[in-house]
Length: 296
Image (cartoon, rainbow, N blue to C red; front, top):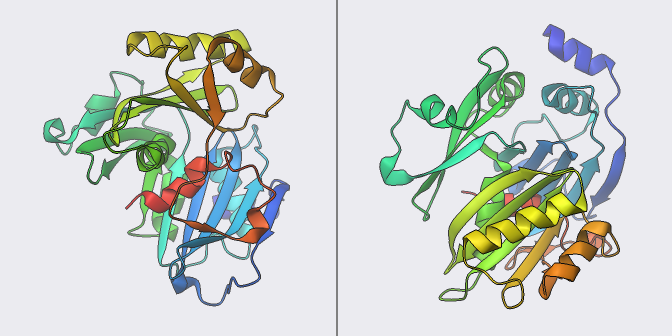
């Protein structure tokens, strides 16, 4: 056992904020399921989808531990969890959440230049970070992002051949999936802990994607309106869809309703099934986790 694994095994994982499992889920038949994980400031979130039924049968949410690295949090949970860290899944996807990413048109992307692309936006720390990429099939787009080195090492060692990606890739795939072909340009917001991801999609193709740090509702609405103005969208006419960690009666949603006429909470990805165990969970939450099912 490595020193890191030993520390993880001796430490208790974060408390579960949510643990929902359908009784049809069979933990002894992992080849029939996909495992999805998101890791970031919101904590760790796990989802499991039944491949044959195209249906989510498990959803778990673990509180963040700010004093512990993401790798430490994942290894602590894996050391005590009956599923995370086990081999045999049909497919595994892990999405990291941070602001250290960039998107490139696929025809302009060159293998080996990932660090050069990223350094325009982020000063990479090679002792603690590595650069990875994710190609968006059908979008002619490549995501390049930085991730915690120890987390990547754990994932690639535990799940060789499986895919690591940035959380915005799941958001982009999910938003494109929800949008209409030949439809109007739509703006989508995903709200995390003091981070706002904004995506604009038209005709199922992303036109804009960025992540903004905010600390007040005023910051939050400023970035939203700024993006709308830069892209020629009108707060009185154009529709805004919201996903993420925000409540109907929160200050963030109130300020959106004050300045934007057509704002609503989004739905889960269409064309997927969801266990009745998830019925009491707001549909606009965990959108990126569900959307990992759309990331080939």
